[in-house]
Image (cartoon, rainbow, N blue to C red; front, side):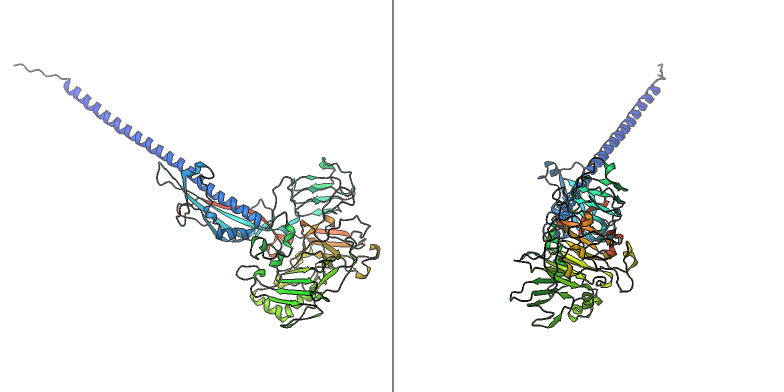
Amino acid sequence: MKITFNKNRPKQGFILLLVIMLAAFSIIILAGVMNRTATVSLLNLRSTQLNTLDSAAEAAVEKVYARMAYDFQQYGPGQVTNYMATVPYSSLFPSASDNAYWSNFTFSDPVSGAAGAVYVGYVTNYTGPLPSQFTNQFAYNSPIYRIACNVVNTNTLVPGVIGTAQEDILLALVPITTYAIFYNGDLEFSDCAPMLVNGRVHSNSNIAVGAASSSSLTFNDKVTAVGSLSAPARAGYSFWTVLDPTTWLTTFNSGYVTNNPVVSIAISMTNTHSIIDIPPVGEQVMSSQGQVRLYNQAHMVLMVTNSPLGGSPEVILRMQTAYNGNLPGADTSPILKVMTNATEVYLDTNSLIQLPWLSLTNTFADQRQNQASQFITQIDMAQLGSWFSTNSLAIGKFNSTNGLFPTILYVADQRNLGTNKQSAVRLVNGAKLPRNNGLGFTVATQNPIYVLGDYNTTVNGSTFSSGLGSTTNGSSSPAAILSDAITILSPSWSDAASAASYTTRNASSMTFNAAIVTGNVPSTGTSSTTFSGGVHNLTRFLEDWTGDTLTLNTSIVVLYTSKIATNQFQMPGAYYKPPTRNWGFDQTYYSPNKQPPGVPCALVPIRFNWNKPPPGMVVNN
């Protein structure tokens, strides 16, 4: 038998084996590619979902921020505190009631793990500079809150993906005195004396610039207005070209901005006079409105009324201190003295109390107000400072060892009720104010106020700050006056000459070192008899100041229209002649340690820090 061999068979089997191996490798590669594709697709889906969830978490955080910012700007930090306790911000996450889209998400508090919630917590209070866009401004004892949220998809294709967001917000209380000039209404420099402004200027309405042909107006810092900025006719002058800034006789070295956002304080901006008014019966001290009233912030409240028994007036004196974070007005054990038919020595059923710094018998004429004689509550500031340190009741209530000092005096003279007389407050002998360990002293009243002679020019009686910008030499205290209107009377003022021609009332030079928060009588037209007087005439005058200088180291704030001293400004020659105004912004107000007590604050909510913490956590910055 002959046997033959096919020499190609081994080769053919090898090829088959090779094909099988290649196919297997291809399948493995394909599986790898498909697995990688699936993995990449899953990662992309996960990344997309994470981005979506992070955006949803950010939306929740921003919704809480928007509500807190609104409450803060409308009503102040007290409203935020109250809502934290009663209407939790934690429930303010996006929901289907906002848009059906939000039904796709479940929001949770990363700290408690509670679903349907956002974390909102108080962090600390902050005093310090604001971000760089807020030049020379700082927050004073302002709360920082932390908002954080975790989010998952309600019906998710990729489990375990959690979006996170965390934001710290600063509810900045910016003292209004960090502005050189701040008006809640129209701000007018029209017909102004030469003026150099070395600080921020703001109006919550319009600004009217321009100057008389012999004057100049220069701004070295930013000027902002919610409305317009122009140079319209005022006070009978009509030679300015409104639309041409080159004719304004005004220099803006840091520019100006119109259509700027409103700057609010912690009170209704349509009823700002209430900051100095007596609270209505039934209003709670620690309510949002109650907390911003100077009446409740004051450590000493002095009320003067007509006596129910006839004869001498009735005087009510209340000394109070803050406790447990509440205002002095919430003091449960104040010292209260009610003196009916008050005389120079005041006697009540509990003890003998003398008020040598108080006089209720002075009177004088105010020719701008057409007042022949007024009811005057007169306070001797030097004697008041001495009384705080020598009167046993005051020493017992204001224990300086424990850091308790009387830094705010609220005064109200209500004797004008039912009469045609104007009641007012006058501060005399005010060169040296109560020092209060450097904390300063503020006087607030719902009445017009008169300041007679140098004010806040020394702390020791031997070193004086009497020149422009001289408050930096340590010879003055942080001080402010809040009133319905303010009139400056020179050291040469005479009550006896107040009803005669102003030419018989020759003034003498003086210095005033304090912030001014007051009202004005706005312009009602363009003529000389309908003019507000402008910022340079905000401090009123009743004397012939020809050849004399008034030095003002101050911050000028107009929050409201005067309610009591409401007669329109008249041009010089009717009841006064103006001084040489040596006016300057007191730049010590840029320091938190130099803020006058009780000065209202602008409310500026700021996004302070941003973070993306791990799920279930908040992190410290």
